[in-house]
Length: 245
Image 1 (spheres, one colour):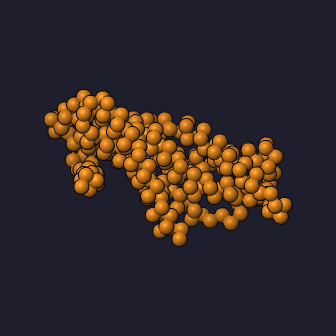
Image 2 (spheres, rainbow, N blue to C red):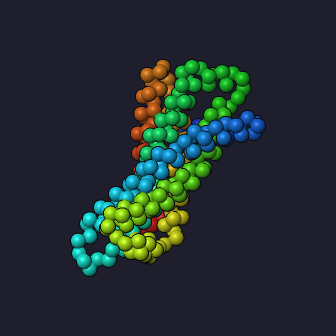
Image 3 (spheres, rainbow, N blue to C red):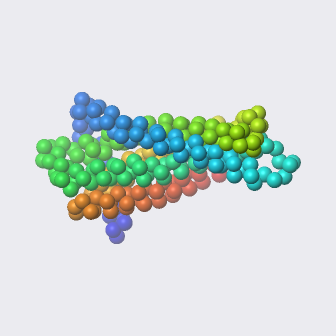
């Protein structure tokens, strides 16, 4: 029953988030601050991980091609497919559940502990719209982060393949272009947009409705990471089944 209660509270929170909006002059500052914290602040770690994981995928693919009849262009093809279909949208989103999700939960949870949320409600402000809606708007730029992750992942594979002697530049580029389906990119960005909504709302839910003191803020951050990751994996399975099968 606790799970059903939390699911119901989550959807009620989403509905309440859009009611009684905060003045745009105030909301604009909150949105720009969240863009800086959630999006721009995440580009560095996303770029670092994407570049080196792309290189690892390319190296592992090359090392598992022992048959001389298999073309070297398969390295670029396998790297592109891995990065675009799964690594970019899904793996990065799980990493972001730890970085962005924990930040959102701890920041809102701290406001709950210090009774700042109660003060907002006493002043007649819709605290859910004031706190959660800017994060939802800022996360609409999340596909931009994933596009950087895709580019750097494929580029990292190119660097590792060429300078590691596993494939020539021409073979790698031929593999990237081989049997390219533009719908795969569309599928990746659809997943990314859905994941962005999950990353903005589930951590906010755990932070907003937490109870207790400073210790419980840490527990809420851990719980939000776990449930955000679980939901991302489940949605990933459902969207893949619906869109690619």
